[in-house]
Image 1 (tube, rainbow, N blue to C red):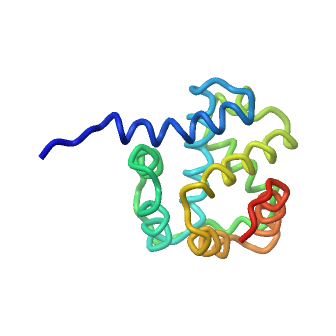
Image 2: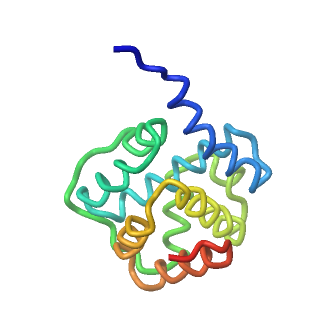
Length: 152
């Protein structure tokens, strides 16, 4: 059996190019940001929901999603947008200030990642993923996606 890994890398690179272009970043910065948001999403959804998300992602993004994942049945219950943004920044580590800047930029960046993910996740899966978030965070993401003309 022959597997063309370049094909899988190309799909992952599509997301990085989308983010890098939209946010005027390098691919390396886009990769760190994508990883931070994916890991924050992962912390907020159940294992079952994570598996459904992973099933629809390109192979390269599947790897990014599960990188350093420690399976747990506990999910975070952050209720406020500013706390969610802080979690994203924490997942980015020491590069957070450079990658995300101030809170307004963090919010725009997070919405850009959700917009990029919407190219790969079905409408139903996107809806299910967002349903896992508390109302304020869910509303924030939905409003951001609608501003980007992504309706579900």
